[in-house]
Length: 165
Image: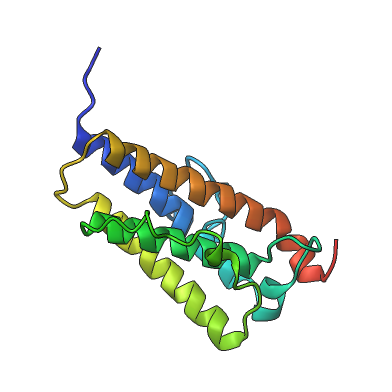
C-alpha cells in the first residue's frame, strides 16, 4: 500500500475547500458540486438579495444569512486556530446564529468576509504547520461542515427567492 504524505492530503483538502467556497473552476471537473459556476458558497450567496437571505423559510429555523454568519464564525475560528490560538474553548457557537436578518450593507460585508475567511483557511492549509491527527480531523471536519451548510442554503434557495415554500 502506498503511504499518503501530509502535503498531498492537504492539497486534496484545499482542492475540495476551493470548490465549496468558489465553485467549480471553469473547464474542470468537480468532486462535490454540479458544474454550475455559481454552485459554490460565494456564487450561491451572491445570487441573493439581503431581503432574500434574511427570509425565514421555515418559521423558527435559521435564515440563509444565519447560515452564512455561522459559517463565517466557524472559518474565523479555524483561521485563528491555524495562527496558533486555541479559540474553541471560549467559542460561542450559539451566538454565531444570532444574526438572522441583514440589510444590504451587512449582506455585502458578510459575503465579502466569508469569502476572505474561506480563502485564508485555504492558504492556511498550504502553510508549513506541523500537521497531526487533530489538524487532519479539524480540516476534514471543516470541509464537512461547510458542505453541510452549503447544502442547507442551496435547499432554501428557491423558497428564499419566491418568498415562501
